[in-house]
Length: 536
Image (cartoon, rainbow, N blue to C red):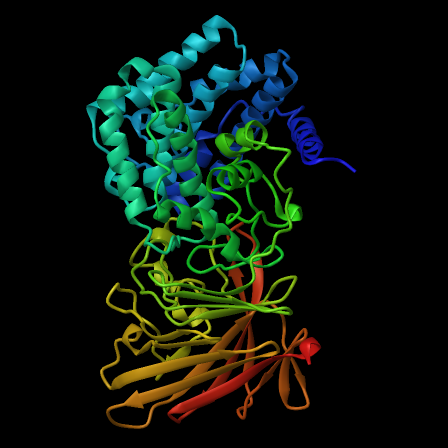
């Protein structure tokens, strides 16, 4: 049986072979400009990230096997030749100096080049070219300007500041002291986006992204001058967030722009375990992957640098009931299924209008789903158009529709938590609708080993109102003996549902079918049961 390190070497070898014949040294400017014409991001980004994947695979392979690689030198020169390292979605079409924009991906590119130059024995002239490009594209723009992400409380702050900080520490350590306070202030802004409960409102993927780069920078800084950013109970709570997000196997909580299936970075996770102790659980090793579709260099390299063969390889469970008080996320993992629901508000980072929505998952997938992230286009991040998308609007969530009206997007549209614990989650979500006659919408969940009971109590100041209780599933439901069945999940209600198929674009830009299950009535009470039949 292969150990974890041998598994990683096999993964690296396969990735290296995937890029062995890669010759994509020219990026298509027309594909870059396509974003400004149509809003499409994927055409250019697929080419861009393939190039980053080649750099990542060849640099790490070269380091691990201590070999030379002329193709690595070629890809580095090709990256240095790019007219900008930023993506078109992050640059205004009339930007005068796009090469000086520090966005997520220009920062990551700079970090990858600086780390490659640090660890790999490159020709002197190539290292000098990297040094010059980093100075022109990162150091000068940073020292001569200000960037919006410096005061952000989400992943941009940690990724951009973390990468910029690592470039300084690797290539310009003599200049670091004069920017240190500024970088640390940005990291404080990033951490302010987390409550004391440690929850990342942007979801598991963005936790690994933002908190990952925070950790990468913090570890290097600690080695550089002894500054320790990893002290305190809040940091530990953030470190523990990942394990709660795996509902069953690789099925994850996907609120906001999260993903329904998740992976974890073994290097980052083992580092957190080593630093914070056994309270950090190692998820199932089958769901380990140390690079993503963006081929991020820092995490992949650390899956080798931070590998500790003495630590568990995976499979530790984190079960039971968990409530994140600041985020208002409630999670309950039972033997046969898992349940998650949220309160919060509709003005969060990567917001969906989803106050009161919930998820039911089995070992393989979400049965009652939160679709999570849709395809990222220009319109998807436009405040005017964002909530026209099915997956971001409350019409695409497991929520009531009142007189044809959906939840509104505003931080004032929020939940009031009534109870969270003892297998009960009760909240008032009426404030998310901004409907004058609606005085309260009390949503109650009661969970036991084989059943979830949902009850919605509507209070109106006057009139009779038409309600549609909507459920969303990725699986076509079946009608059996008057009940609705999704795999082993039976939904019991006194109302016969209307089922409709929808085709929407997922995060990968692919069409995907989802099914809405609508219960239509004109009353002030709705109740249904979700019974997991194999638990009976």
